[in-house]
Image (cartoon, rainbow, N blue to C red; front, side, top):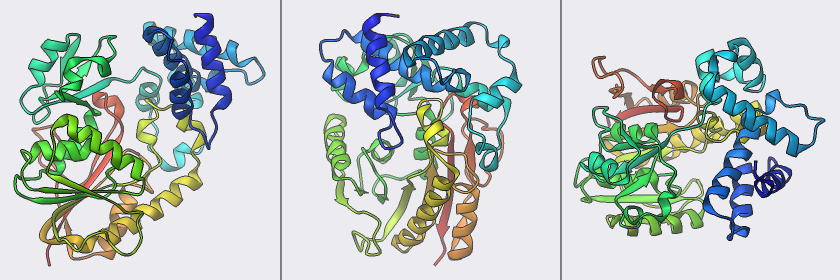
Amino acid sequence: MHPRVLQIAAAVVAKASRETPADAALRLALKRERALPPELSREVAQAVFAYYRWLGWLDPQQPVADSIVQASELGGDFSRYPERFADDDILARAVPAWTSEQVAVSAAWARSLQAEPKLWLRARVGQGRALGETLGHCWISGVAGLGDAVEYRGEEDLFRTAEFHAGDFELQDLNSQVVGLACAPKPGETWWDVCAGEGGKLLHLSALMENKGLLWASDRATWRLQRLKQRAARARVFNYRSVPWNGEDRLPTRTKFDGVLVDAPCSGVGTWQRNPHARWSMTVQDVQQLAAIQRRLLSLVASAVKPGGRLIYSVCTLTRAETHEVAAHFEKDCPQFRPLPLADPFHPAEPPRGPLLLWPQDFGGNGMFIAAWERSV
């Protein structure tokens, strides 16, 4: 490992904490290291994430730099010789002990967490294959409805490509794209993305709506909405308006919507492959607090759905408290909403069913839960 890579990675690990997630510390460190060649910046990121991915195998008494080297070696060994790592050992070391209280932990899921995550792109509608051929080193999902989902396997910095700056694609996880399919917005409809963040799902909704109709975007962080504005301009998405909203009782608009998407704040257990530091900073108490927030958000925004309209709830987590239990609580609290069955794009031969729980080990996306309801009155 290059000495400079090791030095920066060790500094990031030293800085990371519950209050300062490793990915945020990494961004700040690389921002300060503007002269660092792109390939070394990529190695720093890989070293930091390897450290947290393999933290359960490391001796806490040894120097951090030595642990980073060991973690990188473990990651390489796992990539080349996965059979050398026993299921029981991975189950014991890969996730914190509390996880089994909330997640249906399996060896397949735990093993998926130890692999490098896939990088998914969403091309413009109908342009997935063409984008893959242009960028090279790509694999097209081939899943019905997800033909514009492209896995990039190359080494180029995609943010520097002409295609990115032209708005030909967005970085969006595969299972995040399934959320857009579950919403199934139609051109001319009016939708509200309640927790829009930087707009990944909103941009997908706009694409599915052919940029026709109206989208509302709200978020508690104005800087995220500013980032959405930049992304929307690059993607040439203009059928939206944004408004700050921090979840207070008074809704940001009196508009009645054809559809409302609540992609709620969550524990992010479904992203533990991509964000391994979160495994060791999240607690079961956090899960319970977030579930309360999710229940409240659904209850608040239900009144904004017009009769016959749809309410979609999604979270990139796999805990029972934030998934099926939140859905059950909402159905008991709001009987005017009837559950909608959802088609699973990965199993097209199966009939639509209730909420979808998508696992990382199945098709290489983040873990994701999606539930849908229709308002009857």
